[in-house]
Amino acid sequence: MTAPPNRRNRLRSPRQGRPDHRRPPVPHRRRQSKCQPPERIGLRLLPGVSRRWCAAYRRLGCERLLVPRKKDNRAGEVGWPDAVVSSEESNGRRVVTGNALPVGHPTGTFPTKSNDPAYQIDRNPNAIGRHTVDLSLPLDPIMAATASCVPMGIVGISLNGVAVYNALDDAGRDAAAHEVQDLCAGHPQGAGEYHYHGPGFCQNEAHTLAGYAMDGFGLFGIYDNQGREIVNADLYECHGHTHNIELNGSETATYHYHLTNSYPYTVSCYRGSEIVRTRPAGGGLPPPRR
Image 1 (cartoon, one colour):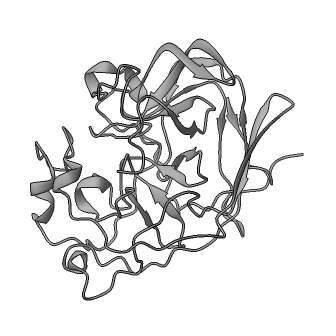
Image 2: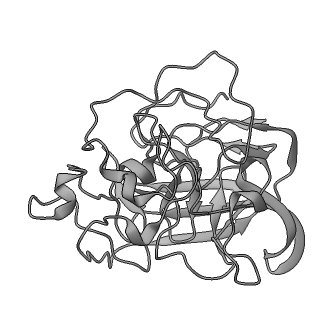
Image 3: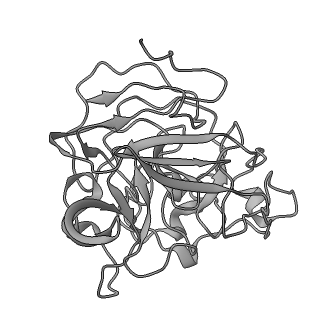
């Protein structure tokens, strides 16, 4: 079941490509199962620059393992004192609202300045801006019989109100390998929406909830409850697994996703039976049927 977009579920997302009527890829913990092909745009990256960021480099990017401390990061510490986010439980739903600015951490400087070393790698021309976040997610998500693909762009929302995207950039490449982001693994897209493509130095706490996927299941950090870093081999399809976690005020055994330093970094497919689609602010998706 896919929940139709409505006024509640609004979050600016990048422009979508044409529908892909081919059979989606088989869900796999090391693959990104996307519903639509990405738009092909001019490449902004100098060829080969990102290879040193990866422990193993493949055609699309890191694929095996990103090495964050080797990566060039965006300079700057821009604060956002007007950033707001709220999460409430109401009628079986988790209602998240905010203005899409990061609560609790600064960002890099965007657009990229010409004197920033990152300018020679990824000349991101976009400025970070406010956008409406108004989501209603399942409070107690139910596992679907089979996994389903994720869209290009937004696949979840972090606790600090920032959108979590899938592993790919607009050109269908490994975003972590081909784009320069700030120390929190964030940057703005064309409409100015600041977002993450994976874990950064701002999400390093051991086995803590980092956010929620669009099917309502929790998205946790890169460590397990013993302080060991999670890798793909620890996860099932869709970049998640099931065990006891602290959620909604109690400990329960439930499926959940993990951020990792291994491609595909965030949510690679959905396991929930209800998937909330986002409605771009100002239009884009059709209105809900009445």
